[in-house]
Amino acid sequence: MAKLALRRYDDPILRKKAVSVEAITPAIERLAADMVETMVGSNGVGLAGPQIGQLLRIFIIRDEMLAEDGNYVMGPPEVIINPTLSSPSEEKVSMVEGCLSLPGLYVDVIRPKVIHVRYMNLKGEWVEEMLDGFRARVTMHENDHLNGVLTIDRIDKRERKKAEPHLLAIKKKYHS
Image (tube, rainbow, N blue to C red; front, side):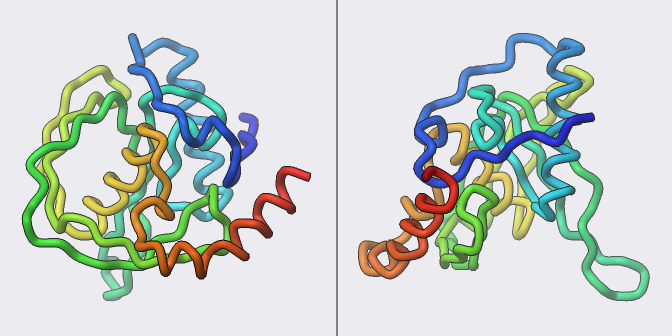
């Protein structure tokens, strides 16, 4: 399976809204498998369609899990298709987020602690969950990509200004 090329900051596709996946076809299954390989190979915890040039409402996530030895490990990759997020909690949590499309940039992002999600899995089954903690955060981050939103859009102007030199460096490295 081919590892897919990641789209980096300032690629116009990262600012577009993705369209729904109409059906689980062999092409979608292949895309999902390639996305998993790309995410794992890039040491990511999430990867959305637009990040690999596909304007489709699909993303892959890995949740944090507690291993038997008491250490946290990444869980198996999960495919999320056509997600709808709702009922964000009033309680918000700030956490540092990174992004494969913004390599080396880590910013504090405030998000709801809990969110409800409804999505289709790769079997074509609809799943509903109340998400909390890390899983909620990764899901909201990847869902943002489906709507053309990046982490830098969720930080205040002062922090964004501090990030500018790093963003310019990404642009220069990947788009020159």
